[in-house]
Each structure stands twice: as C-alpha cells, then as structure tokens.
Length: 267
Ligand SMILES: Nc1ncnc2c1ncn2[C@@H]1O[C@H](COP(=O)(O)OP(=O)(O)O)[C@@H](O)[C@H]1O
Ligand SMILES: [Mg+2]
Image 1 (cartoon, protein in one colour):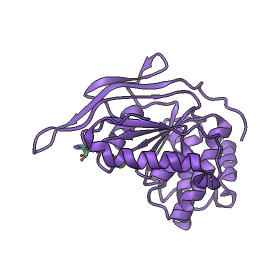
Image 2 (spheres, rainbow, N blue to C red; image 1 turned 60 degrees about the vertical axis):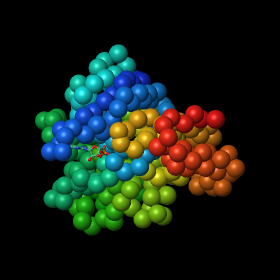
Image 3 (cartoon, rainbow, N blue to C red; image 1 turned 90 degrees about the vertical axis):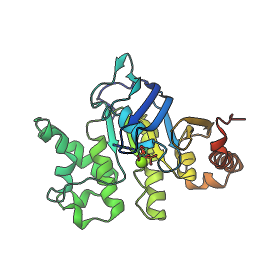
Image 4 (cartoon, rainbow, N blue to C red; image 1 turned 45 degrees about the horizontal axis):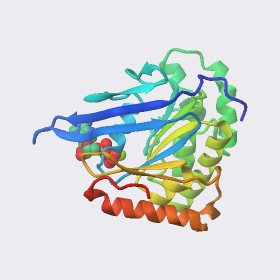
C-alpha cells in the first residue's frame, strides 16, 4: 500500500470515562472512571468478559456515544462527534447487500455527499491487498464471512485513517479464518503505522496483536490491569509457542480470573 496522506496520527486519550445507562430496573453503570491512552502507531488490545463495557468504551472513543462523566481527547481536541480520523469495524460486517463490494467500501463518501471517483483506485488497491480483486463488482452474499470482514476492513481504511477502532471484528469467524485475519491485520498495522484499539474477549488474539493489553473488570467496567507484549511486530503465528508469549497470556489469564478482587498489578 502507498504511504499515508490522510490526517496525522494523534494520541487518543480517555480520562475518567464513566457511562451510566438508564434502564427500567434503575441506572446501569457500564463504565466507571476508565482512563485509556492510545499513542500514535501503538496497538492496544482491550480484553474483558462479555458485558464489561468494551463496546460502550469503543463507541465513546469513536465519538459515536458520549460519556456521562469524563472526556475523550484526540491530540488537543475534545471528541464530541464521530471521529473522522478513525476507521471503525464491528463484529457484524454491516455491509449493504444491494451494493457491490467496491460500492460498500465507498459508502461513506456517498453518504457525506463527496465524489467517489478519487477513491475508486484506493478501493481497488485495498481489495487487492486483502486478496479480493476479483470480487470488486460482486455482492456481499457471494462472499464467505472472512471475505466479508475483509471488505469491512477495506471500508474502514479507505480514507486512510491514522486510527483504527475495532470491536471484536473477527469474533463471528471460524478459528482458522480468524487467525489469518489476525496475521493480515498485524502486518497491515505495522506497515502503515496505524494506531489500533482492538476490543476482544480472546486472550490469545489480544496478546498476538498488541503492544499492550488492557484488562477490564466485569461491570462496572474498570481497568483491572495491563500487560505489555514487548515482542517485535508484525508477528507470525509461531510467536504463540515462544516462552515470552506464553508467559504473557498466562498472566492475562490470571488477571481475568482474579479480576473480581480489584486491581491487579502487572508484576
Ligand atoms: N444502550 C444501552 N442501554 C442500556 N444498557 C446498555 C446499553 N448499551 C450497553 N448497555 C449495558 O452496558 C453494559 C456493557 O455493555 P457493552 O459495552 O456492550 O459490553 P461488552 O461489549 O463488553 O460486552 C451491559 O450490561 C449492557 O447491557
Ligand atoms: Mg461488545
């Protein structure tokens, strides 16, 4: 892929983010005073059990939802609306069935009333990168789950965002497809120096991809601890057998098991 020409990467920083949802049974505190930083070029995984507030956190970081307390900054600017310098991906690919793959990738420009012509080549380039050149004019229903998520990845990257925010993007895929997409994502993030925040409940996936894994506690979501994975990126699947890697996933496993006892130090 060619070099970056989009907006420059800045630090994304959440400070004291609390989110309370109203509900018929009374208010639900989904997040309680979460601090989280993503530096330019850094890959951070957010790991936590189902319902701990990961999706809520990602939506707030992306400017798709607002915190009840606390704030999110990108560089010196407060995030108060959807963050244009971020590409966002969710567990469901959210492709429109009646649009071709290429037109799905170009959707955001049409929605914003911008010309798509300058981006057609970029869309083709991205499809080539994920091995889907032949599918540019095909419809999503002709693709497997893994191929559809690759198209969703192209769509998230088409405006060359310096930031990628991903909410369990490979959670619905079979194990082998998920592994190959993890490898592809790791290579892409390293090559393009994209900052990535990757939400998952998979320990191996979190550690395989990240420079740093942030562990969240069950509801109300708080930061329970953090593990650095200071192994060079991009990584190959073989890294999972290295003792340094196994030690870190072991530590993450223990943190998740002990999480109900409060903050666990990264020792
Ligand atoms: N819009 C909403 N209204 C009410 N409760 C919500 C809403 N969104 C999330 N929640 C609640 O907040 C908690 C955290 O949800 P979520 O962020 O989806 O967790 P996760 O992504 O870690 O599984 C859950 O208990 C969920 O039911
Ligand atoms: Mg979620």
